View 1 (tube, rainbow over the protein chains, first blue to last red):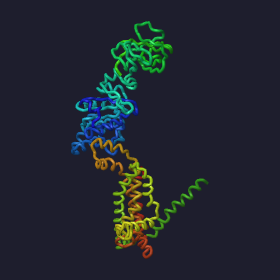
View 2: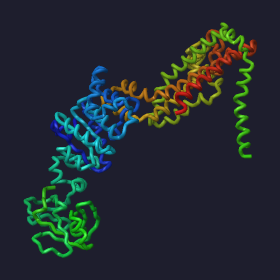
View 3: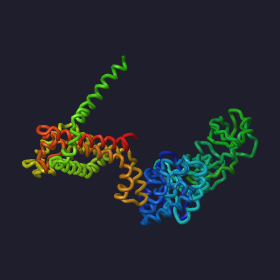
View 4: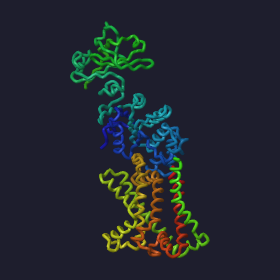
Length: 304
Length: 248
């Protein structure tokens, strides 16, 4: 019986399988590989190129087992190596390849059999920028007509490659949907962190959503168990109690700070914990105790 | 002082090995070597030796590779006992092994195959003492293999035989060669188990080591000549192993 992740997919779908370490993503890929045998390609996290074969023979191996004659298998294998810009390394053994080169050979090996299901386990981990770009381009170009499942930890891969996302936590798939669904309506703290938004869980009422006894004002028709998303850029921080139209304002203490070149992400601990994204200039003027405020229109409520 | 304390016993150890070999070479009748080596007794013994040693190696390969596989991959609770059992012929006095074979497969044995005092019996005696050498080498080789390469081959459409032939076997080749050489040399040199179980019948079970033993009592020059041939074989073996597999 096929797994619903593949069963519910359309040809052409690129599904990003994301989740915390140890959630069982690699195990699921192996299960999918076994279920879709022989019409499947799998790029292992450690690539697992056969150490006693050249790059060319590694790619030709799968073609030979698809019934091609030796000459044809090698010919096609060479073409795949060319597509991944590693044809000049055809005669090398895997121990003479860099991580990025080996990854490109591994992708060529998996794609050469033209599988209906292509599974990639962290294809961009431990790979140089150039190799990652080549592999991304080939995966995108080859997505048509097949279902591609991509395990990744990088939000960039999700945005650049995937049209769907499946979130896996503790061995279970906890959410599936389009990239936009998952970005705007995350259903677990982990995926909310990955897409970089604040996720609140509580009870929706006529006034908004009640989170741990605090009512967060929102405009919503949802009632009962609900999630709410607040984008960090929608959170305003000030040293004094704000006199703006924002209906949500709480005092809090600055906690974890993540400073980047053009922005600062800071967690404010108060009645409702929120991450705010502000400019470095604004951050430099803050005192340790601040007021966090959010407009009711910036609180997006949806059923749990 | 300390240098001498180490150096003197080390030198004696070297002499212990080198002196008898040198004596053997010194006494070898080089001028009549060809004659002795091509005598009918010697030719017969050489033929039986080749037949039984390669026969024993073949038996070891056919049975030892699956056994090594079980020892390397199995997680069954009895595998440690099994490995200990496989090692027994290595430490058992060969004559005891020969006697055990006699009671197992001889005329009145538990399984009366009547193999005693036949060429097949000499093969069996060689296989008995050589098997642990091959199994140990292969088991170590198998343990160094990453079984995930076989998974990768399976995903690429390779069946069990193809995975063994194209993935496992090539990676196992160094261990296979080293183990085969050791096992073959052990079978070639076997004396005690062979003479006890298979006897010393010229043209049937009299191998080179047995011929040397017999010749020592009647024709010393012939014994020396045959010994030199065996010594040459042993040296060639070590050179082959060192050059290809031992100095990696």
